[in-house]
Amino acid sequence: MNNPTQSHTPIFYKGIRDLTNTNMCYRCDWCTTGFNQIFWLRQIAIEYYICDKCIDRYKITNENIWRLKYVENITEWRETRVSMFFPYPIGFGDDDDV
Image (cartoon, rainbow, N blue to C red; front, side, top):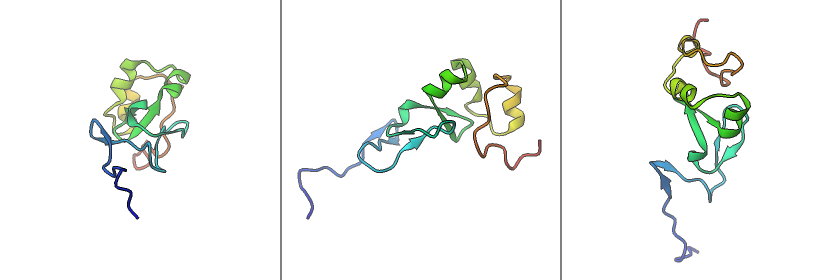
């Protein structure tokens, strides 16, 4: 039976669904740690996300994060001149000729 006291309307944060009470999560593409709320992650290369722990590990600055936000291929990634020790996310640039 449905419980009338529970609300089944989804909760959103800036247009992105809050997954706290679900079995789903948003994942960091570098360490694969799951997060229930998208605001714990930063966007890189349009469709990838990175957590604060990985930002600290790879010593990436906020300026570098901003530069990588709309990168679409490996050539653009290299043009940003972000640290050479910062790896591409898995699956990034698979279709590009390098």
